[in-house]
Image (cartoon, rainbow, N blue to C red; front, side, top):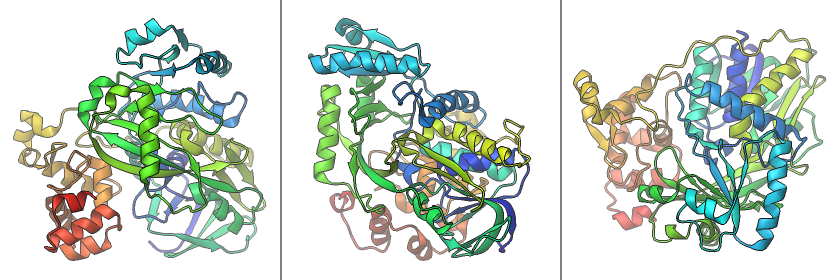
Length: 494
C-alpha cells in the first residue's frame, strides 16, 4: 500500500476501531485503519469476556450507560446479518450474605433508572429454581433476562470484514509513530509503513489512546491499564452453569463472574488490578487463584472441573470512570477512549456517536445506511461443525479431514479463512477465526498440521512462517516442536 490521502484514518483495529470503520463505510468515504498488530482485535478486545451487557448496572446518566444500552439493541438487530453467535442466556446476580442482599435493591433501582425494566428480584427459592447448584448460603438474587453472550474475537473480525468489503482499507503491522504538525484541514500520521494523510484522525487505540492523543496535541487525559486474569474450563462444566452468574459489584469492578461461552466452555474471572505496564499480559498464580476462588463463591460445584487455558487482558480505565469520546477540531482529531470492559457491548453505538460528532462538524455522513453483506463463514459458534454434516462433506471432502480433534475443525475450514476479506497471517489469527487449537489439548496434537496448511496457503516455507508468527508462548513452543526439539506434553502445556 502506498502512502496516500484519506478522508478518515482510524488508529486501532479493536472492536471500537472496526465498528467505526464499518459505520463510516456506509458513506462511501475513503477510510484507512492503521493497526500495530498483525491482525485485528489483538489488544483489549481480545481478552473481553464476550458478554453483551444490557447496561443494567452502569452508572445512570453517563455516556457509557447510554451507549451500552443502545449498543445491546444494535447488536441484537445486526448479529444475524454479521453471522455472529448471539445467545440470550440471561444472568443471575447472587447475594450470598445479608450485606449483599441489601445491595440488591440498589442494583434493581439502577437497572430501572437505566431503562432495563425487566430485571426481577428473586427469593432464594426462586434462585434455586433457575440455578439448582446455587451455593447453600444464597440469600436472594436479581434476574437480568436479556444479558447475552457472543464471541468478542468473531465480532471484531466480522466488523472488519464487512468494513473491508465496503471499501475500508486495513494496514496491519503499521505501528503509529507520531504526527506531523497540523496542516490546515488535514493531518498526517507517521507509521512504520509510511505516512498517511486524512482530514480527520480517529483515535481508537485502546490502552494507547492517551499517547496517540498526546502526539496530536491533546494532553488532558490519562489511561490506566487494569489487568484481568481468566480461567477457561473444559466443556464438561457447561451443564453446571445455566446462565451468566454475577457477584454483587464492588466499587472497583463488576467482580469475578462465571459465564458460559458460545463455544461450550465456562469462563471464570476477571480479576481487576490497576497496573502501570501496558504490555503486561502475564498471568500469575496468585491472580488465577483469586479468579478461581471468586468464581467458586458463585459456583462451588465447578471446583473439580478441569482448567484448559488461562489468559490475561488489559482494559483502559479513565479516572472519571466514564467513556472519553470527544472531537478536537483544531487538532483534526476524534478521541474514543476509556471504553473499559463494556466496549464490546457499546461498540456499534459508539460508532454511531462518533459519526454524529463528525456530522456536527459539517461532514456529510449517514448513519444506518446499506452495506454489502459479509460473506457467510464456513462455520460459526453454535452451529454443527461441517465435518458432522454429510452433505457438506460430500460437497467438499476437505470438510471431512479433521485436523483439530478437540474442536472438530476440518482442513477446509482452515483453508477457507485465507479466502476471507482479511486474511490471517499468524497461527493465533487462524485460531480466532476457526477455534482450532483452542480445545482441551490447546493445540498439542494439531498445531503442526495447521502450520503446514498455513504454509501452503500463505506460500511461505514453514520455518519462515513460524519465525514471522507473533511470539506467543504457544507459537514458541510449537516452533521448537516442529524443529524436533523433543518437548513432551507437560513441558509444552507449561
